[in-house]
Length: 140
Ligand code: CMP
Image (tube, rainbow, N blue to C red; front, side, top):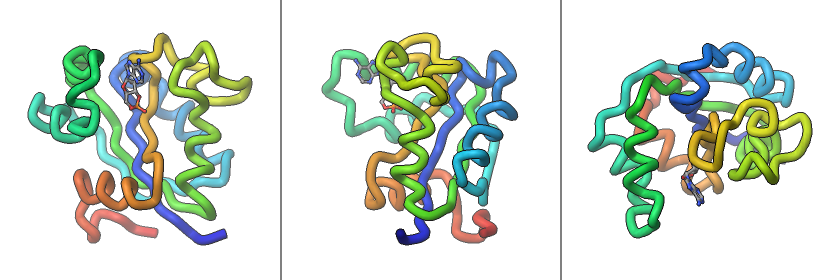
């Protein structure tokens, strides 16, 4: 298993309910290290650009509105197989399908307000990390 890095976002539904610490504990308990982290307010342009791959999807405009509705916490997670490990602890996109013990099962409100984002491949992780962080921001 290669040591990898992946991008995680704690979304506005979770920051609104003061869940950053509880989510971070679940990430750490899953064997991931938080090697960079920043709380920030996304602009419309940033949210649109980050989710540009979904621009043609019917939920895109609502998703952008949701992602700017409050602060997010962007973070870089590091560990063995970090991309897959993070997706396992996040759970399914739709909380109705998320397994027991996952972040989305515990906290997500809906398929849109689903508390966390995680990169879905090592290639996307590299691009998503670079979207938010300079190399010098990441301290492994
Ligand atoms: P995320 O993993 O950040 O990737 C795209 C996001 O779009 C997803 O989590 C949800 O927050 C949101 N979304 C809203 N509706 C849907 C849908 N029908 N299918 C997938 N993602 C959706």
